[in-house]
Structures are given as structure tokens and as C-alpha cells.
Image (cartoon, rainbow, N blue to C red):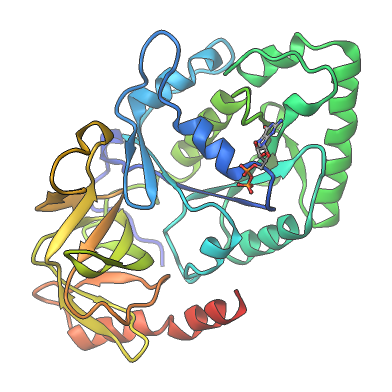
Amino acid sequence: IPRAPVTKAKENDLRSPICCILGHVDTGKTKLLDKIRQTNVQGGEAGGITQQIGATYFPIEAIEQKTKTMTKYEKQTLDVPGLLVIDTPGHESFSNLRSRGSSLCNIAILVIDIMHGLEQQTIESIRLLRDRKAPFIVALNKIDRLYDWKETPNNNFRDSFESQSRAVKDEFETRLNSIQIELAEQGLNSELYFKNKNMAKYVSIVPTSAVTGEGVPDLLWLLLELTQKRMSKQLMYLSHVESTVLEVKVVEGFGTTVDVILSNGYLREGDRIVLCGLNGPIVTTIRALLTPQPLRELRLKSEYVHHKEVKAALGVKIAANDLEKAVSGSRLLVIGPDDDEEELCDDVMDDITGLLDSVDTS
Ligand code: GDP
């Protein structure tokens, strides 16, 4: 049922989009994450990039810095406060996450090695993304391995490509074409992102190198472009909480905790929450909301910063009683004063079968 928003959201009411990264082993997922995170942009720090629980947060100023070389080609208005990138790359973590109506990941990056083309887990990832109707883009990584590639660190792809020899350009085109054919065999139309006139029908390909950083500006630019232009509805703040348990962990001094990605809304100390447990729903109260201490302050007593309240989107650790049997991938809901607790318990437990299935097969 289509519902009009009560008040028209202003641009600055948008929350940060959330991005996941997946693909075959050794395609460069971890390295690409590291490269995106690198704060030492020449001519000053791209400040404010913060390590959260299970995720890295990029404030819009940092992204602006990192996409500077794109401005000669593309103009962009930046409406979102930043971008949240989930740190655990790969298939396992992603397939563990619930599917139904999940708002965990707004956009995914599927990494393909340009020298290897589609591999087994690439194909599994495509199925997963398709099943979950998750929008994604392809990072065609390791372009620096094309024979005789001349690197310009952290450059946009088009400028780097222009400065290559005829032979390099030819090898790129040949490899790109064969990968587009492989994607078509999986039922996917694809196109280089700057030639893509129909983002709804064609998957965009961004050539990248996680070693030289070439194409990384393009990747960040495209993530923002797609999420801001095509998903602004999903990025509006909601009054209710949407969050997903990434991991269940025992932490000294806190007992069993859950690491959660808060996709929308607020969490507060003292909130009554409900999540999925192995033996039934768990109803408990948030004792502490924790994020990691900034690196330079690691000598302080605690590893964590405590928060009274946190706002989406972010990754946060929750300490509470009775979390021992919590199931990763579960939704986590807040029980408001007018909510029917039993109904919410049923809601979160609806997912248990799917969650346990994916645990069994992984
Ligand atoms: P993951 O398994 O997908 O996380 O892959 P990694 O990030 O661990 O990378 C696998 C290997 O490929 C490592 O040795 C990386 O240094 C290398 N690698 C990753 N990206 C690139 C790239 O863009 N160019 C080159 N030449 N090597 C890369």
C-alpha cells in the first residue's frame, strides 16, 4: 500500500546509506576496504572517518575529499550525512543476514577480479543479491595488473585510462567484454558506469585497483549517486527502529554482547529490546551502548566509548542481560510504551527458520 510521508522530508533529513561488499575469495575485498578507509589523502587528512562496531563511517566531508578528481566529469549534490560501509566482507556474513524486507544493506559492491572473471562465489553472490533484491554495482578490480599499466595513485578511472598505451586499452576492452558476456550468461546486463544510461536495467561496472587506488573515487561517487538519487525514500528517518544483529560476542567486563547495525531510528540506554534467541525470543534492557575508542585515545582505561543515545546509521555494541542465546542475523526491535510485546516477539521469531538454515549451510 503506497503511503505518502506525512511531512515532506528535507534533504538533510536523510540518513547515511549502508554498503556491503562481497565476491569471490582473493578478488580484493579486504584490500579495497582498506584503500577506501585510508585517511591520508594528499593535501590534508580526509578527517572524521571513524571505526565503528563492524563498520566504518565516512562523513560526507571525507567522501568529498576522496571524490575530488571526479568533479571535472560529474557534478554531485551531497544530501546524505555520510556513508556506512560494513567491514565484514564476503559471502558468509552476508548470507547469514536476514532477507525478508531487510534494510541492512542499501547497496552492495560485488568485486570481480579482472584477470579471473566470474568465479564460483561470484555466481553465488549474484544469486544472493538477486534473491534479496539488493541493488549492487560491480567493482572490476586489479586493473593495475593489466600488462604495462601506468599508475596514477587515487586517480579517477577515466583519466588513468586515457593515459594508457593502445595495448593496455585493448587488453582492458577484451577482458571487460568477456566479463560482460559471463554476466549476461547469469542474466545480467552490464555497462561501464559512465556509459550506463539505464541504471535500473543495467548493472554498473567500476574498474578499480585496490593497490593504486585508481577507480576508488569513481566507486564512492557512484555509491552516493545511486543511493541519493534512487533510494532517497529508503534513506528517510523513521520513527521506528530498524537494526540487525551482526555478531554475538563475549566481552570481558560486559558479558555476552551483540554487535548491531542500526539502519534506522535511535537506540537509547534503558530501551527495552526484543531479538531472536535459539530457545525463543529474548526480551531485555539495553545496559550500555558502546563504540570503539578513537585510535589515538587507546591508552585510556576502556576500549569503548559509552553513549546515552545513538542515531542511525551506525554500528554499535549492545551490552544487556540474557544475550547468551542471541542469533546473529536477527532483527532487533525496541518495545515502545504502546507496543504489544508479544506481537514484536512473534515478528522477530518469524525469521528464525531462515536464520538457522543459513547457519547450517555455511
Ligand atoms: P579478499 O579475499 O577478496 O578479501 O582479497 P584480499 O583483499 O585479501 O586480496 C587478495 C590478494 O590480492 C592480496 O594479495 C592483495 O594484495 C591482492 N590484491 C587485491 N586487490 C588488488 C589490486 O587491485 N591489484 C593487485 N595487483 N593486487 C590486489
